[in-house]
Length: 356
Image (cartoon, rainbow, N blue to C red; front, side, top):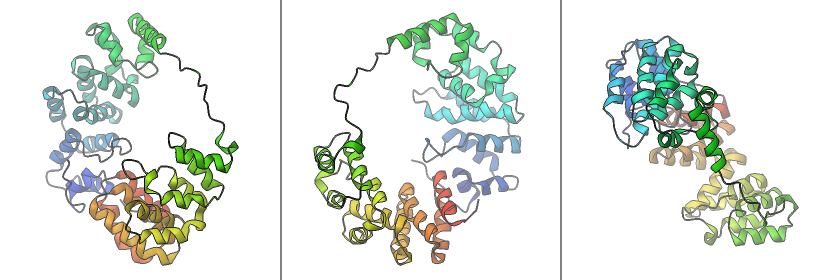
C-alpha cells in the first residue's frame, strides 16, 4: 500500500501527478529524489487510467536528472512481477522524444538482456521509440538471438508492435505469429444466441432478470429504458445482488428512468442499506435538485475520508452540475486530495472549476 503525503506538499502533489508539482520542481528541496521515487515505486492509484509516463519523463528532462538511479533499479530488480519496472520502462521510452538520447541506450540494453525484456519491447512499440535509430537499428537481431522459440512465443502479441514489424524481416517471428494465430480455436457458433434485447417483451425481460446470468444486466437496462417501474422492486431485492452486494444493470436502468426515480432514491438514501444508498446517491447526483445538496455534500465528505475515490466522483459530479457554491471548498479539498488522476476532471468538467 502506498502512503501518500499531504496534497499540500510537493511530494504529495508529485505522487498524485499534479501540475502544481511541476511548477515547484525547480525550488522544492529533494525534488530529484522524489521524482526518482515516483518512477521506481509507481504511485498511481489506478494503473488502467492514471497516466504518469509523460508526466515523469517531462520532469526528468526539466530537471536534467541523471538516469543512473533508474538504471540501477532495473539492473537490481529480478522479481517475477513486472509492475515494479513497468513505469520506469515506459518513462525511458518517452525520454528520447524530449532530447534525452541517453535513455535510448538504457532502454535498448534492457530490451535485449533484462528479465522483463518483453515489457521493454511493449514500451518501445507503444511510445513510438521504434522510430529512433539508437533504439531500433539491429534491435530485432539482438533480441531474437538471445531467445528460444518458447520464450518468443510467450512474449509475442500477434497484432502489436514491435512484433508486427519484426515479422516483416524476421522469419522466426513470422513463423511463430502464424503458428499462434493458427492455434487459436475459432469460437463455436452459439446455438442459443439470444434475440436482440429490444425485441423481448417486458414479461420475458423480467424472467431474464430473475434467472440471473449474463443477460440480467442488459435486461435491467432495457426495462429502465422502457420506463418499467419494476426496476425499483429489483433494486430493493437483496437476493438479486452479487457477492459484492451490487446489482449490475440497476444504475443504467435508473439513469433511463431519470426524474421518475427521485422519490425512491431519496427514500433509499435514508434506508441504511449501503447498496440502496449508493443507488440513491447516483440518482440525485444525476437528476436531483438543489434540495439534495446536503445529501451530496455528506456523500462527498464520507467517500473522501474513506479514500473511496471512484465513489467520490458521483457526489462531486452532482454538486458541480447543481453549481452548489457552498460545496466549493469541499470540492476543492477533494480535488486536491484525490490520488485518482481521472477524478480531478469530474467537478471541473461539471461546473467549470479549473485548477492544477
